[in-house]
Image 1 (spheres, rainbow, N blue to C red):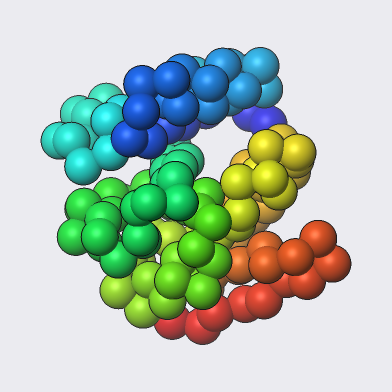
Image 2: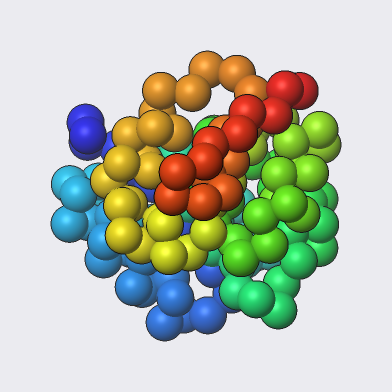
Amino acid sequence: MTKQTIAVAADSAAGRAAWARRVTELGAQPIPVPLRSPLPTDHVDLWVVILDAHTLPISIAFWLRQIRARIVLITPHLPAGQSLAQIVPALCLVCAPPQASAGIADVLALAESIRSGVIALTLPAQVSLCAR
């Protein structure tokens, strides 16, 4: 991975800190951002947005629509996350927390390579593509 600035958004400070550490370990510069807060004015190459089981993706759709850089959405609600493809132009990849945690370097590399559409990592052996 080239040196990138990656915004890491999650509801909890502990969640942001944990994912920011993982991003740092990959050589990127993290910017921790509370979910639903104003977007940073710094340049961001990629967003990693982490939702817990209590947060439905549609509840942050308006906030996500403000983001211009590519978005990796990590959520246990995969079909609901996938459905945002039609309304969140920057969304490029949706995956479950265990998949993202086990292979964050691969997830971020895949997100870098996506030029159109949304890839949803639904199960270890399944990938689906959502057209816009």
